[in-house]
Length: 161
Image 1 (cartoon, one colour):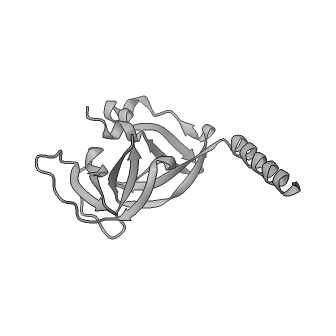
Image 2 (cartoon, rainbow, N blue to C red):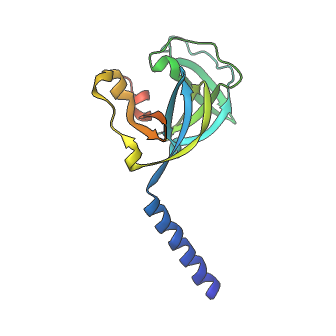
Image 3 (cartoon, rainbow, N blue to C red):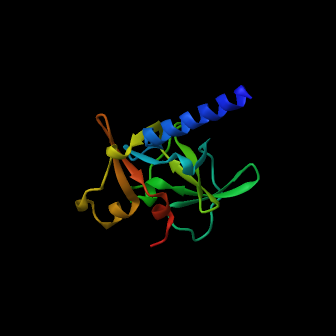
């Protein structure tokens, strides 16, 4: 009986600490030498870059489809989707598997760095001068220490305009 009480109290303390902590986790990666972040809760897994089967008449940023353990997944080159030119990828490039409205989407990025926790105070609004495309894809700016990371609104990135 005491063991159950201790477990409940410990869980209550963890929940209270998370509420006080008030930080959100983001996966940080690089596209075109710029550090971006996405909500870690949307990330299913990270895979090595692999060849995709081309889809005829697809948008330029859609690199095709891949098979991940029996699931067919469309693959998007985030560099092209964000308006940067195409590039050759090296061994550090990878595919981030993102769950988007009950569907998996693979996102090619140049490099995954780490996971960071960001408080509400460190999340800043985007500047107004970046243009409509910029503001459509970037939801916030994470200013942590001496680094600035652009937090992507993943849903907006994949919605056709």
